[in-house]
Image (cartoon, rainbow, N blue to C red; front, side, top):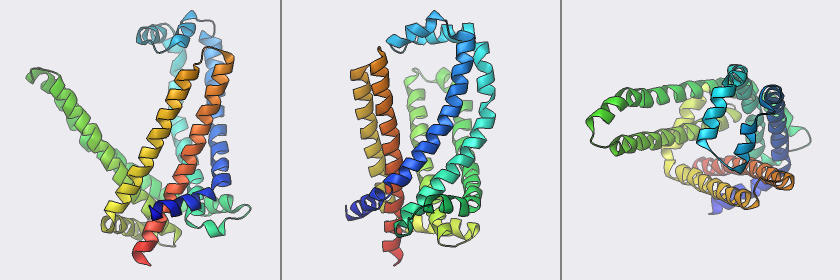
Length: 283
């Protein structure tokens, strides 16, 4: 609890830095969103199927919509191959500045965020590529055998419940592995911020994680629980308000943006908390 309170104090100092990250993410999202809107207006803007979706999720309507207007969405899907690398670069830059401000709150000053983000971008980007490759390998090792054996399982077992249970277990195992990779990556970047080279920082980050894994795992679980609670509150409020009127859509949009901003603040708090745990372990 003391560690979490310490992380929250450092996170409070990041409220303006979090606003910068939120604004940059919003600009990136709007650039994509306006393009999507232009394509949809030109191709399916007058479709009555879109109005049917205002009443809620309808799988049949969505499938009929894709059959009729799927060709109009193909160019947008094709652009994902360009958007994903752009988002990776932007994510490394934005989160790098946030991380440095979180672990060195005493060094926050005017322009510190941009200076941190630019100074550490190259080393953080290399690390991000390494962990992206590890994540892809982890995903392939887990899900390729599952997909290969899924049809034989459905034909062998008396019920599909067993196949569903195995699939859910695989997803839970995958999420656990991704959480470990996230912690390892975060501790590696903290080591890099202290001046260590990439290879040495990766080894030191793994060592940090293994020596105090219980505290780190509980910390990440606590923040995941907080984010889940915020998501439930957001979904409840958005469902209660509804999106059937222009006013309701506007209020839900504001709630959505508040939820996104709160997640960025929590990310900074988590960075600071992990840093405090690491300092207490080695100071």
